[in-house]
Amino acid sequence: MSERQAPVDLSPLDRRIINALQGGFPLCDSPYQAVAEQLGLSEAALLARLEEMLERRVLTRFGPMYHIERMGGRFVLAAMAVPEDRFEEVNAQVNALPEVAHNYRREHALNMWFVLATETAEGIDAAVAGIEADTGLKVFPFPKLKEYFVEMKLQA
Image 1 (spheres, rainbow, N blue to C red):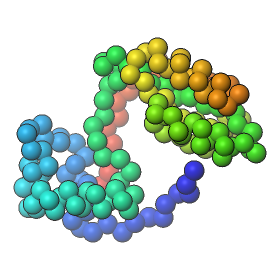
Image 2: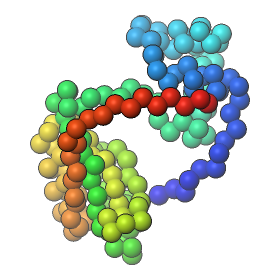
Image 3: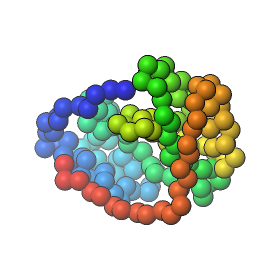
Image 4: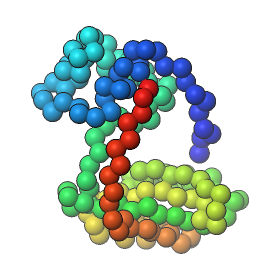
């Protein structure tokens, strides 16, 4: 797991791009072109800036948020108590799985927390069983009981 990144200086253009993309992304044939025009840029320039921000890890992800359950899938937050001397080994095993979306180390008895996302509801049970078989450790899945939407827009 990587250490926390130091703060990055953003150019005024990067700030404008981030602010423009935090909501209301256009649903049209050429959404990047539409955003670029709004910002007074070419589509190629906008895409280049986004790629550069992703490479520098100013942005860690840029993409849509899906309601996976509406598409027949499922996701859960899961945790494991991993012995310290096996943490890196188990971390590599868990992260190698395509069902693992995020993985975080925590200072807690359950010191590894990750999100499992599967195309079918039944896929979660199979993923949990696979991780337990591969690692020999118990996985504690915490399914979502209620969904909340909190829109948080950051002034970049």
